[in-house]
Amino acid sequence: MIIHVGIIDQDPVRLITPLLDEAVPVRKMVFIGTEVQREQYDRLASILTPRHIDVEFFVIPDIINITQIRDRIHQLAEQLKDTGCEIWFNASCGLRHRLLSAYEVFRSYHWPIYVIEPYSDEMCWLFPSDREQQQVQDRIQITDYLTIFGARCELSENPMPESLNAQLWELGQRWASSALELGPGLATLNYLATTCRKEQILHVELSEKQQGYKELGTLLADLEETGLATYNDGVLTFKHEEARRFANGEWLENLVHSTVRAIQNELPTIQDHSLGVQVYRKIGEREVRNELDVATIVNNKLHIIECKTKGMRDDGDDTLYKLESLRDLLGGLQARAMLVSFRPLRHHDLVRAQDLGLAIIGPDQLGDLQTHLYEWLKGAGGEAHIHNPA
Image (cartoon, rainbow, N blue to C red; front, top):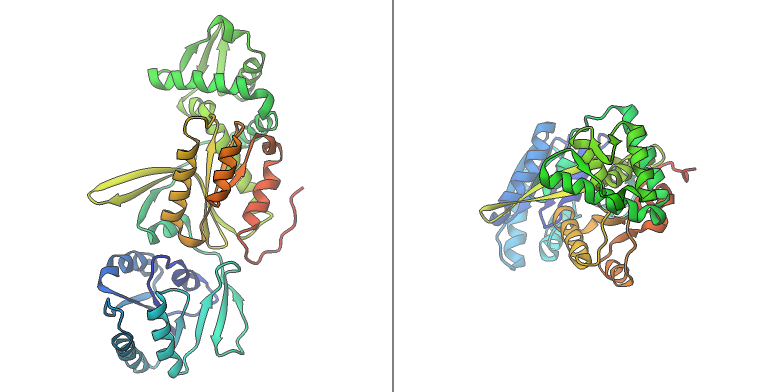
C-alpha cells in the first residue's frame, strides 16, 4: 500500500480528499507541519482515523531557513525509505519555501509527486509525467469539511414526511414564482409569525386591515390547504412550531434545499447537503454559534447559501460581510457562497456582493430558481455526466 505525505497549511482540504477516494491506494498519511500546527493535525487525524487510515505528524522547524527545513525533511525521507512502502508526495498545500524544499527532497528519491488541481479537482502528476490525470471522487461530507477548519456542527433532523416535503416544495415554488406580487402579503405573514414567536404562542389575531389584504388571504389559504395552519374568524393558528417557522421565512430555506436535492439527480458532483446547519467555533474561551441556512458540498468544495425573506435596507452590508466571512472561515480558498433574497436588492448591495465574490439570486429570478442554482453549482467544476434540467 501507499504512504502519502503532505504539508499542512491554512487550507488543507486537498490533503484529505484524495485519501477518501476509493480508487486511490492509501495505508498511511504523514502530515508535515510545525509544532503550532499540531491542533490542525489533530483535526485532520480525527477525520482519517475512523476510516482506518494511519496518520503521523512530522514536525519541522518554524523558521525561514531552507537548509534546516530541507535537512529535516530529508530525515523523514530516510525513515520512509526504510518502510519498504511506495511513497507519494501530495504537493497541493504548504507555504512556498516549505513546499519547494520538500519537493526537492522527494524528487531526489524519484518518488511519485502529485497535486490536486483546485477547479477541476483532478489528481495531476508532476512526476512521473506519464501518469494520467484522474478525477478525485467526491467523498468528503459537510461534517468533515467543517472539522478541517476547526468548527463542529449539528445537522438538522428533518421530521417532515416525504409527502409533506413535496407539498412544501410545491408551495414554496408557487410563492417564489409570484415573489414581486406576493411580497407585501409575505411581509405581513412574516410579521404575524414573528409576533407568535415573541409571545411564545401559535395563534395571532389579524387586525381588520390585515384581514382585507388580498395577497395575505391567498397565503393563508395555501397554509390551510397544506395543513400547516387554520384561519377562522380573523384568528390564524399554526399547527405546530415547525409550521410557524415555515411561515416566518423558513419556506425559502426549505425551497432552496429541496431544489438542491432535486438538482443532485442532474449534477452528481453534489455530494452532501443539509438544511439549517448549526456551526460552533471556538474563539478564545468562547464558543460562537452561526447557522448556515443551506450548506452543500459540490466537487469537494463547501457551498453556503443564505436565504433572506426580509428587506436589506438596514443590514444589507452586515448580511453580505457576514456571509463572506463565514465562507472564508469555514470553507477556505475554494468555498463559494450565495445570497437568495425574496425582497428586491439595492444596486449598492449588488455591487458589494460582486466585490466580495458572492453570487446573488433575487426575487425576479426566483421563478426559475432551479436553473440559476444549477448553473451556479455546476460552476464548482469537476467531472459529471450532466445535462440542463428541464
